[in-house]
Image (cartoon, rainbow, N blue to C red):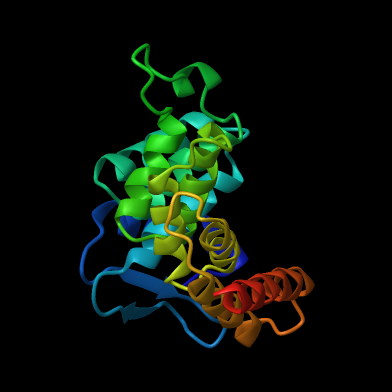
Length: 220
């Protein structure tokens, strides 16, 4: 909960404390004109939104105070917190963290940006799964499609991530890093159209797959 304008500083103090302590029952104070003092509300369970809310406040002021945001996100990332991992990757991608810290090691290992995405992806975040696969696909060429890229696209696609479903359907159609399967490609396209029936790109992709399947079936 947020305090009125006259008590913003106090509100941020409580928000920061809840985020840092990550207690099971953090307290938030809500003041209104009808209340002489404060109304204390106790939240139930692990209050992860407090962590993200404080992170959002730090990110809003990242240009003025990048160190506080970076330290906070890095601390969360070291704890394998998905939000912290995502924000570290975001800070690298947007140049908030020095580009030199995102260089690959001499042995050719992945960049820190990619490592943060992979850790978040492996913890089940569908957007990170998609972004990791997309970034990893940069290393591909027409003679060498990655099974790992396809696997992460599938992980995200199976959680309903539409961009991942589009990419995975096309990889299934072409047998790119995964066994060619036109029926499965059609299924993913139809899943998208159930949620977004006016998606013209997917309609075109689906029509092409159906034509190819019809030709394949006729030649069988």
